[in-house]
Image (cartoon, rainbow, N blue to C red):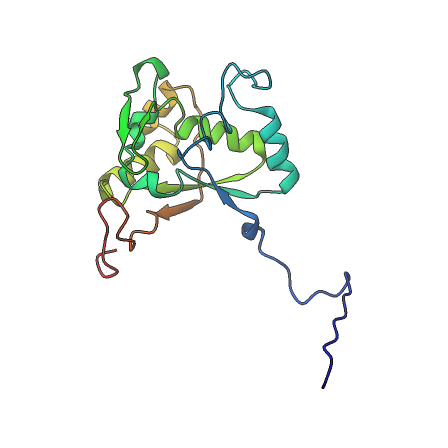
Length: 188
């Protein structure tokens, strides 16, 4: 009978590791957003309502990129509900998780959170109930410098500089029959 042998050499390197392997996602599910990364009034929340203890842990883990809104939530999410004055944002039934979505936290808050966390943004567009035009509007809102309806709305909402999102995700698990507006592979 032969024996297996393992040699570990911390200095031996085959190739570099792509920084995006240390990515994560945040979804409006359970405590992930509300009372997770965002909890105004918490003793450790900063002026934006971001949990500083969570930010420090995310930095410690070395998270490089975060997908938002992640998971099944995105397939029924209208990103426009999460922009503008928080007091004017609609409360909606989230069909993925059967909970009330307050929309207190949206793409602008997420962009601000990522800056503090030192992570890049991977923005997900809704391919469930959303349309290609909705996705284009979100891209324009987030990335166009100014002079268009959506970019000027971002500026009006307090973000003069574009979010400059480089990585975009088309839906989430659209092939899964559990997904809101499930798509067959050919349709996706």
